[in-house]
Length: 298
Image (cartoon, rainbow, N blue to C red; front, side):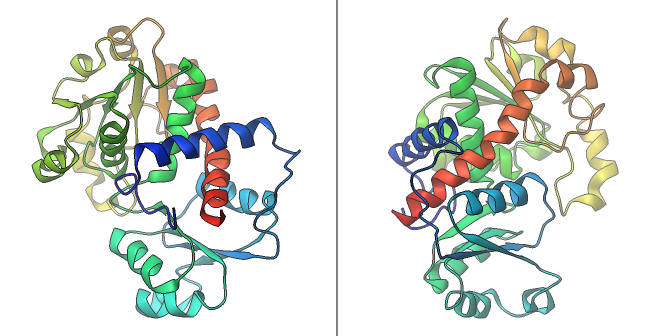
């Protein structure tokens, strides 16, 4: 594995290798015998704001022995129109790895191709692979295994999280139900390409029926703020609340990739009832990302 650009580009074996190493790193945190980034400086190129992604990568790089350099788009020439091609060829001569959080998937792929250094997709409009890997680790911890799991994703099924869940289902074979308005269904071309065990419905309770994991994300992704009012009306029915939880399996867990807007995509009561699992999920970003960086250096 030279880069981590998407779930689509990973094999099932690579996903499971990341999860296995992440479990080991989590269990041995503070007692690491290997610091593969010693003497290295990794750049964090962020065009989108972040809490969990930035902190988990900066801490992870330091725990693996390296240094990090945070570069927001407002602080470098990329934000003033310098092509990603030129940025990649400059930084590839100065830093040892790149973590990129931006809008276009093609920018991350172009950077990886031209920079010559390990490149990690820390979120694009197309996918959020690091988050999904942390989610899969969390489900393993909560249930003991991913075998036979049924996941219900409720909300915008064509956002980066919905698309990443589709590819995770395609690679690992678990069941995925998507509940979304018609305007926010993933495109048929994506569904045909993924060929995953996925069902799509307009009814959140139908998607939740018997599910082991209920999952949601914000209704308004970064860059879609001008659509906030329209989206609020479209997604009003697509909330994880007591009725949706009651439709799921008796021991179902609720997960949220955060930030959470209580009273919109999830009620405050449901969020707090499942807060332990949700913040375990957030913590697992650190362990998964450390595993990714270690494997990129191996």
